[in-house]
Image (cartoon, rainbow, N blue to C red):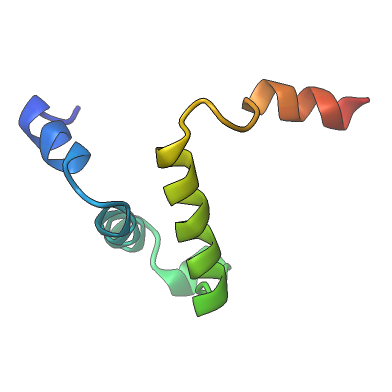
Length: 74
């Protein structure tokens, strides 16, 4: 379990810094060579950052995962 202080520190990070922390943790658990997934291209990374920034700017926007799954099931 994360300490409240660590959660607060993570919340204070920029989206880019949060992604960097995520990549560091991911790589420590599952190195890229073992994951079977290629690293992101700069274009893919830029798109993910754009979407993350959009989600932060409009947290109520988009659809929930349940709505997405329900749409696919139709």
